[in-house]
Image (cartoon, rainbow, N blue to C red):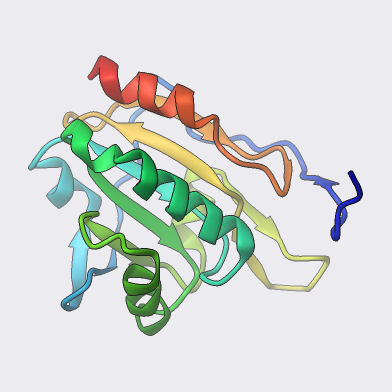
Length: 172
């Protein structure tokens, strides 16, 4: 099969691992109604969080990841699903509506990519100086802040093993 794009190896990521504490952060969390500054620890006060890092909204990996998670019904596992990307709250609002992910907690807007840097999943875009975004990554964070499952892309494009994500959700 001939691809319309080149598969590129990403540099090795030193990302947050299973058993480690998830770094807390506060960013605008966008849902289908509004957005406000929310800390990860605020979400964890209500239970586990599936934290999903994606490239900017509109990128095809982002579209596929949100469609797959929605179609698999991951929110039905009793976790809050929250995304993180460099996209603005305005772009996130459109993505929430277009992808039909209103059942998720929302999407964190992280324009400077600082959250991805703290999680070790930031990468530079095509050699552009000072321009970075998150590589696709998934962290299942237990209510106590411990990472129970961690995955980060090793190439672009790369997608989570959704069956493994569901298995980790089922073990909570």
